[in-house]
Length: 125
Image 1 (tube, rainbow, N blue to C red):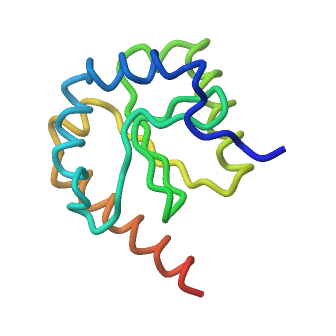
Image 2: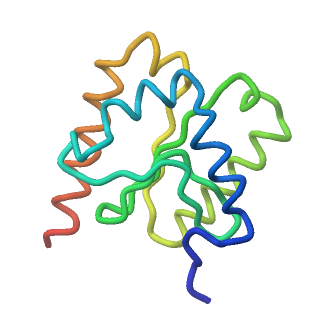
């Protein structure tokens, strides 16, 4: 079965998350919106029942930002299942801690640009 992007049944949740970004999400969004990294990213994009913080269709790249709640066992298990599902669809997932985005923004952006370049080469083959 093909994945369903942006299901209507979770539209309100996605809208809520877009309108209530964390500080780290706002920071990263500033650097990836409007194709600033040469690729279009969407925020709070869903694939089936999973909501992804940032997603680039062209590169099949999902960016997930993890706050403190992601350190708890139950949430980390949910994150693992989500990541495995996305990988099964051929989607690359990169994760950053909120603190990394806020305190090491340049390092995160450098890593993200490198990931984009690697995926670009992969898709040009």
